[in-house]
Length: 312
Ligand code: ZN
Image (cartoon, rainbow, N blue to C red; front, top):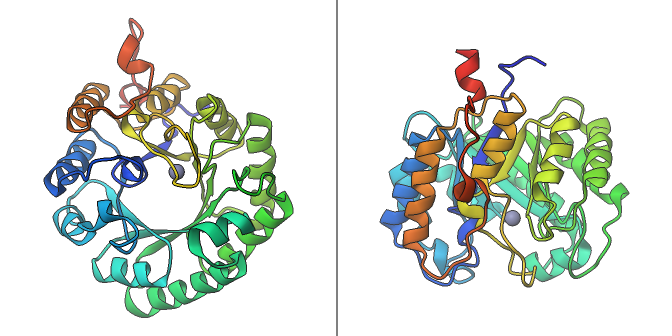
């Protein structure tokens, strides 16, 4: 394997990580969170969610966060958008990337977005039109929530996932995000579905968004790497959850995900000391929240060298 091959890890803590947090995090903490992640070498950060403040008061400050962090050098800032309205807002705020998310599960789609998945595909078509007309350089990630299963519906037909991936790609998505929204995925399934999606979308990049709800998060990431995926979402301290995933634990832990990638010989660009310092800071900001992860307990192995250092 080429030792300089890169795995991109996107910190989604300021978005997914804050979805279920009880306290409204002050805007200046969110801004500091993003700045510190960038300083630690994290190449992408999903900095906020462009949902109506009524739906999620946590993200009522999306505009202020965007104003402070979108222009920072050295990383790609992105925002999650559930619909055209959010996307129009994101385009106006100057985000270089927006991550649209829809659900492959009909029941999750109706509960979460109050519309069938077909309507969500049509919405993405309008988002692509808005992007092409107003900000053609903005990249559009297209996320498929509940790709690996759904707490409401149970099994989600793989054929439907492949069809949605194919159509989102055909409409103009720049990357396809396969999301294990509720932590149902297993490694064999990850390999099978990545292969199936690749058959539909060719070389278009795939991002995998994993939750560690049932302890398979890093095993699923490993399966994704082996299936050729080089882009994963994670969150500092493993924060995160979905309002429709009762008892769900968080995203895969960014520190452990970076260690997994680096120990397998992939460069992440991440400075572990700075990442650990960020985790400590976020823990101090969010007393009473559950933080996960092993590296923060155990530290790096003796003699460990980051892959990026070998490549330099
Ligand atoms: Zn998530």
